[in-house]
Length: 201
Length: 107
Image (cartoon, rainbow over all chains, first blue to last red; front, side, top):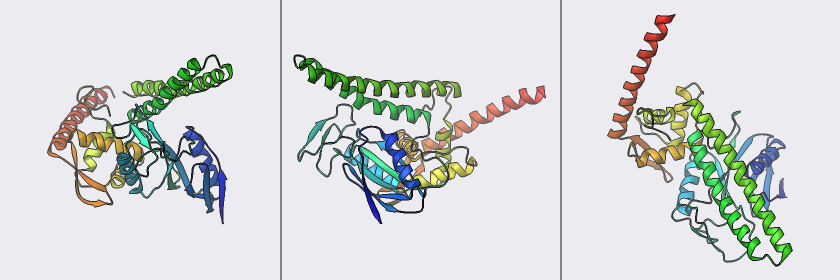
């Protein structure tokens, strides 16, 4: 029997992975995901583990290469949207992305609405982590900060430009603060990793 | 990866990847090799391995070769990679010799 759950996690990837793992613990395996919908089918409880990774700064070609690399490990991989946008035609500029991924559209061969990868593996009793090396994790966390910096800048700009309209300014101001909070969290993690690395060296 | 930053030392992961690729291997086989040779102490995530393989390919220490599984090719060590691994082996031998001399003298 399959069930459908509606959820949206925005950029909170760890929460998304935690929820998918909790669904697996209850005996549900992910079979399909849309913008809001997650379809599951029944399975043996805790048979699968999930990890979620941000790939929104890669070109589509690079994202596909990475997906195929992960699939060669026997993992199942799903693309997932990080934004909630139902526009028919969409073109976005991602100045932080790698070459080939800076202009992103919702064409099938582009990365818009494919900013995340949900990766599934059969549980082998070990924690499921895609990034394990401190240097690699520092690089990954720095990449994660880029969209937060960009969003904070855009929201702050709107908050200032819409100043005569108090409600709009407050809303954009709060969104700016939310992005700054995200930046602080990731930078805190980066600093901790750098400190640990220095101790290890 | 922070290789060759301090005294030409490779990271443990880099050295193990170079060792693994003395025989052509796919990503998953490299991961299994490292896990097996370290008795499970060093477990490398697929994302970290992907980044490491790209970096080592850019440095020309390893290269894609042979049959591909889908588009994911096997990799093998290059002559330059072998020279780097050999240098690391000499460095580790010197380190072990120095440590043995000092520690065995004291015990």
